[in-house]
Image (cartoon, rainbow, N blue to C red; front, side, top):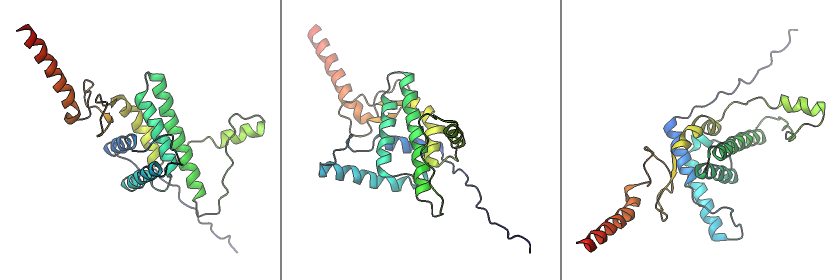
Length: 213
């Protein structure tokens, strides 16, 4: 009898993410409310944070899919904010790498754990291989995987968008403290946030010229 054909699962293909969608996702994630580190003994703060996450995730189901979880998003938010506030290029690249690396690990592990197939979850890679066998396993498991939409945001868009990342110059900003500037000279996230500074400048001008007249 001829051998039975074995059906093979077709390889997964990367889903694409548009640039504007990636920018909106990163902007919303950076401004996502919730304290950090989160005090789990504070019911009010815990509720606010979880409500913010519950509202955030459905808006970006095309980016997050089932490859993420709430606590992981808070970790990504902190890497993103640190990259946003970095004082030099080395720090910025360090936190961007942290965002990418965590996104890859998170999506891959969650994907494996949630897999409906009876596929054994591979052990975590050692930090540094100490034997020839560990070295072989390390290289075997270090091949790049298919990018998930979340990973695509970190790899394809974050390094370019972070160049336009700024903090609103209004210390009391409650709109978008983290924003992407269209011009390098822009200091405020919105005209509304620039009003107090403009008023103060006009007042200084008025006081100076009133005294000299």
